[in-house]
Structure formats: structure tokens, C-alpha cells
Image: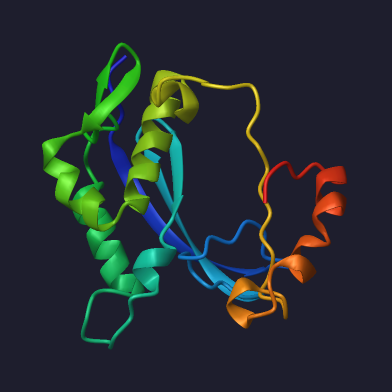
Length: 180
């Protein structure tokens, strides 16, 4: 079956609310409790649909004359990189596994890594494979769950030691958290 061409790209702001931020990376975005997710959806001439989130791009707003952080700039970038191209033109594949990024999109994916998710989603659907399979398959049967302590009075930087933050450890273990 020939690869399908991407014929549509759209961007939709989706308001979200987080009751509790789970799994926050110390260097990640500070999403807080309310925010917009910028959903990117593409469709092919064969009816495949791919999704990604363009939050990183949309948070780079500087002014209305710049392209970063504007819907118009995002749509221009997406059209330039994806529109009219086949789903197999983004990732290098060998024996059903992705081995690299096609040279024509390396720069775009390096500066906007979130775009590679769209490429994986479309290619996986085209090939009838999950993203896990495209990345080489499942490597383990379980993944340890991690938890982090918020900055408490006993945080190491507070000069009070770690004991106040470590008191909740047994409760976390009972709830299935296996590493802190």
C-alpha cells in the first residue's frame, strides 16, 4: 500500500484543568492548575489522523510580529513541514523500526521535537504498528512509579534535613510508589 499524503492540518486550543500536577520534572514546564493545550491534528487523503501537542511552540510568544507563539506562525510551520507530504517521508525505518529522522526534516524536528510525535503517530497508523513497536518493542513488563516531595520545611535546602519530607515514604509505598 502506498503511503498516504497529509492533506489537512489544524490547531485547536483546549482548556484543561489539573487537580494535581503528577510527575513534575524539576526542569519541566510549570503548568500550574489551569492552562491551554495546543492540539495539532493532521489528516491524510486516506483518512488517517495524527495528533501531537504544540505547547512548547506556543509558549514562545514575544510579539505579534514574530512567528513563535502565534497560531498563524504555528500553522505556517506545520504546513511547511507536513502538508502535501507522504507519511513515510519523515522517519527512516528498517525492519519495522525507526532508525532515524529523514534529513529533510531533521532541522525542524530538532527545533520542535514535539513534531516528531505527529510523524510517529501517522507512520504507526500507516504501518499498523504502535509507537512502542516503531521504537523497537517493549523492553520490560513493568515501569517503576516515582514520586517527588514538594519543598517542605525539612527540604535539604532549608537546613532542617530530610526527615520531615521522608515521613510520607511508607504511605507512598503502600499506594504503589516504588521509588522516591
